Length: 351
Image (cartoon, rainbow, N blue to C red; front, side):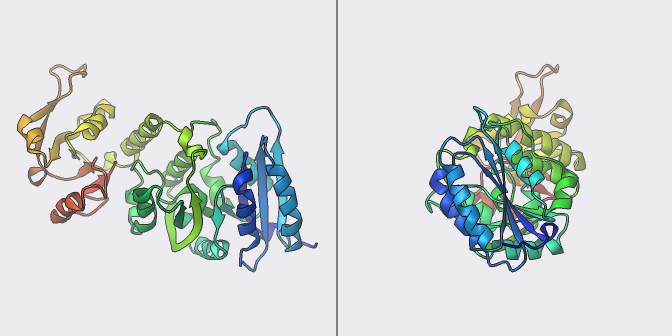
């Protein structure tokens, strides 16, 4: 089979570790792409012990017969090196000017490469994502709605929430030049949120975030997914530091919306300088409001900080909101909307 010049190809980046149950369907979805330009598939096998390599070799023949160059790398060490390392290696051994990231347990819709490439050409310094269909359909309903329903401006303003990147990693598509400008994925291995750290670095460099508003990926949920190995406390720490670095410097003072556990946790997690900007907590719970203030007992300051607790209508923006969305049957969202505020300027979501 003769292949077009490799440096014109769109490179699908596929890290693999023990992906036997899903790999056939994943690779078939690469083969079924309707993109008419040249493509290559860059697979990096991260010490798989199952039949993943047998499946990859089988599909290599079929893919190359259809004109898709397949580049295979990997290692057979006793232990895997992790997702970040595998993605970096898959990128390094590929050659196309555009990178389409894919997880080995997911499935691309036929038009994915074509539509995201078109968007990437228009937005050369952006990460391009897409909407997804979750499998099984009943899993992570709130998260899936959030992925698919964020407005264009919220792709930046909601970058601090516990959900992580506003376009999920298995949907990412970007130019190689921009990827190289941002830098590599963190290679710390299991327990490191390499996608979140790259996303933050991308935003620090002034990158944009764009979503193709079509469902272009079957996004699989299962107990073996790598995301389950990352501790919530690790994610929390990275989120707080990024909030302090990227958002809070714009504000002289701010109010934390939620006088409960999450709001107090955020307050305690802030550095002293950021904590000093908190002028109040606000809430709707009369029992919390009646207490009048929150005292940070573990503070080394003297006197210990006492932060007022007020009703949200008596509070002044900007707000860092520590109330989870889509859990109060619209009550919280109605309260927020009643204040006629602008997201990003007057408030940010942190939960």
